[in-house]
Image (cartoon, rainbow, N blue to C red; front, side, top):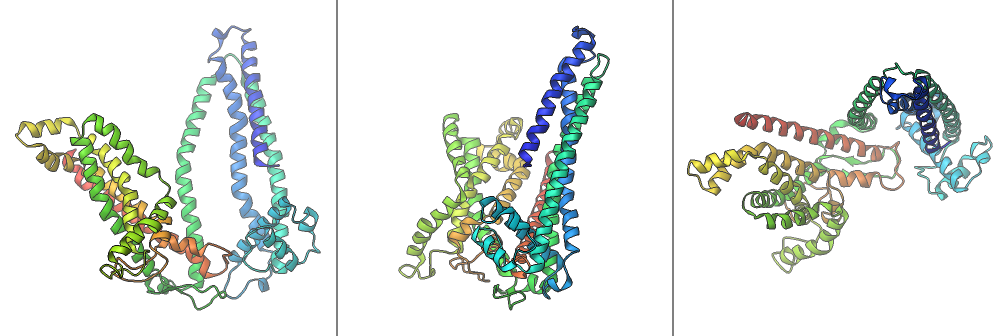
Amino acid sequence: MPIIWLVLIVAAIAGAGYVAGRARAMRSVEGDHRKLHSLPSYYGWNVALKAIVPAFILAVAWLLIQPLVVSSSVSGMLPEGAIPENSSRGLIMAEVRRAADGLDMAVETGSISPEDARSDAAEAAEISQVLKDSGAVVTSELTEPILRAAQRYRALNATGHLLMTGLVILLSVIGALWGIRESRGDFRARNTVENGLRSLLIGAASIAILTTLGIVLSLVFNTIEFFRLYPAADFFFGTEWAPSFSGRGGSSELGVLPLLWGTFYVSIVALAVAVPIGLFAAIYLSEYASKRVRSVAKPLLEVLAGIPTIVYGLFALLTVGPLLLEIFGKDGLGWMQAGTAVMTAGLVMGIMLIPFVSSLSDDIINAVPQAMRDGSYGLGATQSETIRQVVLPAALPGIVGAILLAASRAIGETMIVVLGAGAAARLSLNPFEAMTTVTAKIVSQLTGDADFASPEALVAFALGMTLFVITLGLNVLALFIVRKYREQYE
């Protein structure tokens, strides 16, 4: 049963429980709601929460634990001979899961019948072709052990989902009956509901932490798999990026230094454009502009933040690149060979980052107490002196945060770099040469028929982990700077 139907069934049980619980509470006091401890709606919500929350917790826990149990069970049936020399059992299980998903897709599209998908007589080569024809992601020709493991994986998943559906519905019904049984006039329904809602709010606040933890763990595990296949020293200190997809364990050079240099170089150029323009725009809007000008200029400036990055990429490719080539190319100064270069991507990315810097800085400058400005004017300072010596120092922690936010946005940008900076991984100081970044290479390594049993595909996770550590370091540095300067004004 699809999850959406399970959600609708539980919601229907909760709705029926709400009506029944409210009605039973009213009957217990013979229709006189003044004899109830709580408002009648609280009794209904008590039943609804007891029908939804336990069932939801069971479903989430089941969906998190079932893949681990199924993978562990299926992994045990893989013979050692099915694991290539340069791979591992975990990587082969990734292929098994993709093959199982491909079989599901093929069954849904009608490319293969459900009976043939689970038949032991199905041949691996034939199934591989069927999966490729149906658009499923298959990294290579399926082997017999991987196909049988994928069929077993599908069977266990189907059984687990069926069992989960029955247990979730049963638990929802039991919770609703329990809540209806509690619906009496002296029951403290309001206290129970409010405590339950408080727990739900705590759970909602915890989702961000758990999501971050899940992202980090997924990166860590795949990064560990990568370093089992490729030396960590060659990755962190290598100066050449030349992946080879000719086969597993091929002669690939996967040094990250050229990618990191390209990432920082493009980001520095972008910040050199965005920070001065954005900060000066924020100072003008908050300190000099009239209300009429501000009401028009600020929304127009923030429109830049809503433009898709692919549009900025096209702008870099079709407008900024040719313009720079005309000025700095062979017909001009002779510094630039093509329209794709660090300068092209940096200028366009800087334009994209202007609203991030200006809008946040404007709000931060406006938050500086007017009393500080009045005190400066009272001592005889001019408006420009007040801005330089009072307003900006007071707003500095927030401005640093805005700049660091823009830096993180620049480091994580992909489309502008792909279209504006090119795809060359090199160590060079020339801003008019083509370079690439970490994010652009993450996309290219995972595009197409990526073989997740090879270091050429797994390197994307190592790149992602490296980028995560860098941005985390930037945030820690920003926090240190903010705390150091904030002490002067508290």
